[in-house]
Amino acid sequence: MTEKVGVLGKKAPQRTGVERVVNAPLPTVYGKFQAVGYLDHDRGDEQVALVYGDIGTDDVLVRLHSECLTGDAFGSQHCECGDQLASALRAVVAEGAGVVVYLRGHEGRGIGLLAKLRAMALQAEGLDTVEANLALGLPVDARDYGVAAGMLQDLGVRSVRLMSNNPRKREALVRHGIQVAEQVPLLIPPCENNITYLRTKRERLDHHLPHLDAVAHWS
Image 1 (cartoon, rainbow, N blue to C red):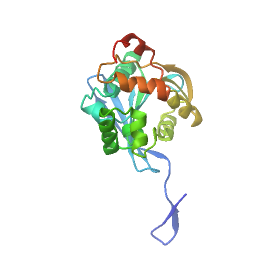
Image 2: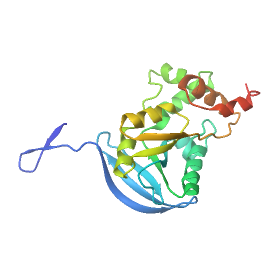
Image 3: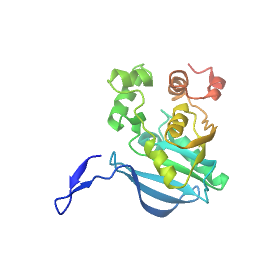
C-alpha cells in the first residue's frame, strides 16, 4: 500500500479498494432505480451500480455491463452492447429486484475509446476483433472485475444469477468471492452489421451464443 504525508508530517496510508460515495434515486424509462456511486481508489474510476427493489443477499439477478459509448449511447450496430444494457435493465425490473453494475474504464474490453475506434477501423479492413487488438499491440481483453465484486459485496450480495454470455465474467466473480448460482443468457438478435463480430466472440472468446446458428445465411 502506498503512503502519503499527513498534515502533521505523519505518513497516512493511501486508500485502496472501492468506496461507496453516494446513493441517489434514479427514475428511468425502465423503472425507478437507486444509483449507488462508488470510487475505485486503485484506478481512480467512478463507478455506479443501478439497484432495483429489495435485492437481498443470495441468487440476486445481476448484470456486469462494460462501458461502451458507441453502443450504449450512440446505438452502434457494430456490437450488441446497447441492447444488452437495455435488456438487463428490463430484466431486473421484471424480476422485481436486481443490480446492473455499470463498469467504467472497460471501453473496448479495457483498451479505451480511441484504441477501440482504431481497432474498429482495422476490422473494417478485414481483421476480426481479436486480430485488431493484437495488431495494435494491445491485449485482447484487459478488463478486471475486482471492483464489480467489491461493489456487490458492499451491497450485501453473496451469490448472483449472472446475466452474461461470457464465461470469464463468471470465473472472475468466483475468484473475487462472489458465488454464481446461475449464468443467465443475454442473447440479442444479431444483425448483418455485427454478425462477424459476434461469431468472433463465440469462436475466439468462448462466449455462449447458440442463437447465431439461426443466421448461417449471413457471410
